[in-house]
Length: 395
Image (cartoon, rainbow, N blue to C red):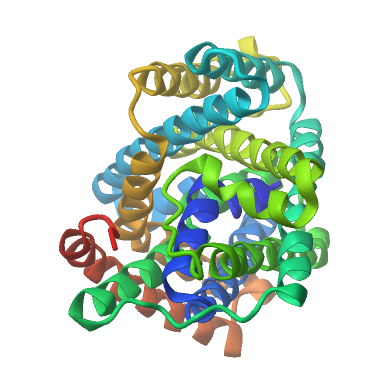
């Protein structure tokens, strides 16, 4: 679920396809780099949760202290709210495309259905439902394979000069950020606690971190390839959610279009669920309140209020008509700026021999974690200037 619902969410779908539409295959390296980074950090936070039974925000408070940790909590929950709002707005758009009914009513209906699903189902069934449903995104991979076999290679990017260079940097940082969005590891480590992992689950943790993420990365590469194959030759910049569903329709007809919309609905719904739940997880972990999705809501009232409140507030904001695609741009930017405050505590906790014992990070894995942390800090520093200079990535 984390690999598909968090990894291939609204931001990744649109951002990656836009990058392909502007620069062809030239930014595949950013996907590869981000994939390696999220595998490393996802494995680390799962390992810390299994060995110490502490999720990410327990670690954040112990490593950053009350003040900086509290700032991280507030800004992370703000990021969760913005992302959840964008995902709910996108759900309304997709349901409107599928049915033709009123978009605002469908946004409310979608939020209510998601809330009911989370309220009624135990964690494992939430994970299975959205994880298996999200496999419909494979249709984008099939479409990319089919179009690649028949279409001419994409033409070189028509963009040149200083603005093109700045745009290239903006989309490289954006793809890297979208692959490493903090709520992915917040949700993943909380899931490890929910499922009562211990040290015996470390091989399972590694398998999930690698295989699930690689699948998400392959779909992301397919999205970029479709941008290069379909939109670049035609000079189209896909800045509407509906536009991103067109490539599977070109390759597979009406069935491809419907499967693409259902696949996007699955992963976007999954991301909305993850961000709402993470608001509860983060808050309760930081303040050491009782939390557990597998317990009845009345037994974990603070956790329930946090995730229900986030979902409800996100729905109200989405109903104002704010553009989901603009929101997701801001969420990716904010996520990149705040990213060091999540990944530094994970990295140091995973390498702490006193807490982790023989399971502490060492050697190449530990070194790679520090290299990627340096890259994350550099990306965080240049995100805001690139955003300002490119006017939110406008060609």
